[in-house]
Length: 444
Image 1 (tube, rainbow, N blue to C red):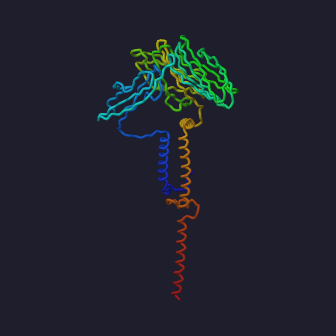
Image 2 (cartoon, helix red, strand yellow):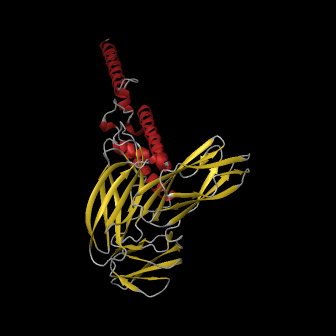
Image 3 (cartoon, rainbow, N blue to C red):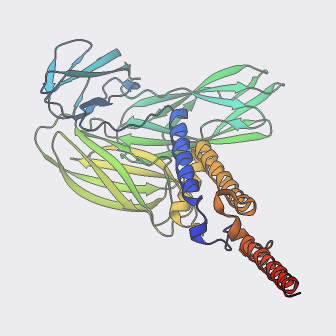
């Protein structure tokens, strides 16, 4: 709380407090960065060469992999794959490679002859029967059924895909498992086991098969299954993106904001990349931008026509509707050319409107999502503020840094100046009395 009884010119220690606060805030920021494994430094006019894509991850056979990089103060850039032939480049591009583990090496030289380098190792796995493989999902049966409740699946016309679920019983008793298909569309073809028992600690792998007819209209479809375990149940939704059998274009979507949390009337920014899978020259394509709710209903739609050459990347901004309800939503992008369709999607969350300002509310939401370090920093800052306020009071009370006079003038105890003046006046009166007595003695 502020010391209203202190004059500004008498609080000589306030600048020291401000400097100490700033030093501690800087220390907290530095500590948080180190805890998260991130060191931030600024080196002016230094050369930079780093690989942005590909990353240390797993790609699927047939995927077009983006080679992208950042460079500053570099004259020439070249690369090679698995110590193969060096190739000079001057921009990003897409490439394909064989199944297995690969290492991409990137080099760049400065005008003074210094060579910088960077490398990344990634894996390409075999595609499952003509498409992208689907990782195995684990279902844990205990006091509640734990599993990812939204699973994305890409499938092309005329293809069959399998999703494997590993169901494990963590209860201390045998549990009966039953799986039911809600049969929303005709894409879910088969469930390998729909009813079985699991002993404590045991697991069973089941296979769910999806199949798209060759005439299935390319779109985003929804299939659901329900897993029953005794009195417990869990619903899993498969969002199946059906693409044309031989699409001429592909598309990728990324929402940079992490976590992907928005409010009604916010602007959603998405990084969208289109790339040509074989057609030469520039091509005019139709693009649909859709926002769908978990039931598959469209809550926002927009169409656009673009001319695409070998590839095209840009930021698409969409204003989230003001009347949208809180919940999870899917941003779905579909590109169509010559009756052939490709698509991509990304999940995001919409929170209800808050009475707090949006910037403060988003900060709090970020802390709730993944902010233990931010929470610790804010708590520490508040404790420091309380501590410094108490320090000001004590400094004023006990006269630290020359603040005693201001405290006295507030009426807490007799002011030092007044006490001195009273003592001086008393001494003067005593002196006058002594002079009068001496004069009387002399006259006698």
